[in-house]
Image (cartoon, rainbow, N blue to C red; front, side):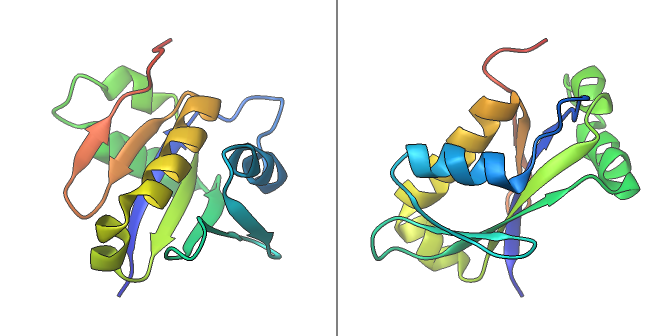
Length: 130
């Protein structure tokens, strides 16, 4: 089973898409391969990460569930989209953290989103909160 981290953000009228994400990640020096519904991202010969974009109805519901009991209830309540970063081998990815950190940082900074790591429940607010 794969692990995942997610960047929740508010999708506004000027729609964020996978092409935007591909550009942001390439600007960080990452190798990006574009697929039909996902990006494959890696740094040099490091592990590959899969990046998906979802704006399905369940995204807002899950954002609210993750926010429960935190100081980020109001911020996450506005989130209606997320980037999902799929990880096949968590140990390998955590051993070579640079790729994961660069992907997370680029997507979180560009969307002003909330980062959630499913494997440890860690929730990180955006640097500039609205």
